[in-house]
Image (cartoon, rainbow, N blue to C red):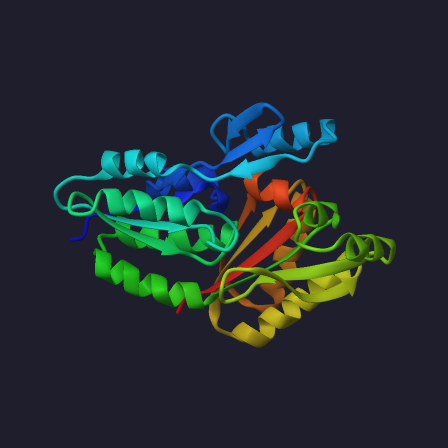
Length: 283
C-alpha cells in the first residue's frame, strides 16, 4: 500500500467538495487590490473577488506562494513513509512551481517530495490532480502515481474563450490594437496552452456559439470515441458552461463531468465571462 499525499495550488480551481473528499492540500496564491492582499480561496472567494473586480477600475495583481509556505505544508504532511506529489501551475505563467522546487530542495533527505510542472492552468490542472489523488486514496504507490501522471499530462487538452479581451491586453497577452479590433468585430479568440505551458491563440471565431463549435470540433478530432473526463471552469458564466458541457457530451465519449468556478488568481488574468473546457483521456 502506498502513502502518497497530493499537493497543488489554488490555480487548479478544484471544487471544495473534491478537495475534501480526496484530501488534497491546496497552497494559495495571492491577489492584490491596491494595498489589500488576499489569499486565493482562503480569505477571498470567487464570488467576493468578482464583486470587488466590478467595483474597481484598478486591475488586480497576483503573486506566487513563497518557498516557506510550501515548506510548511510539506513538513505538516510528512511522516516516515509518506511521499508527496506536488503538481502546479505552468512555470511559464507563474513562479509557483519554482517556489515549490526551492522548498523541496530545502527538505531534501528529510521529506520525499516530487514537484511537477503541469504546464497547464485552471481545471486542466485540477482534473489531473483529482485523478492522482483518487489513485492515492485507493492505495497506489508513488511510482504508480507518477507513471500515470506522465500519461495524463500528455492526454489532457484545454481550450478557453474570454468574454472580453481587456484583461488579456492589460496582462500583456495580446497587443492593444489586437484587443480593440477583436472587440469591434466581436471576435472570440480560442486560446489554449502549448507543450511548454504558454498561452497561445489556437483559433478564433465571430461570436461565442461559433467559438464553442470550433472547440468541440477540435476536441472531437483529437479524442474521437476514446473515453474522457471533462471539466468546465467559468468566471460568472455558469449557464454558458453548462451549455458547453452538454455540447461536449453530445460529441465526445464523456465518462464524467465537473463544472467549477475560475478562482481569483486565474480570474484576474482572464476576466469575467471566461469559459474553459478541459478534456482528459481516461483509458
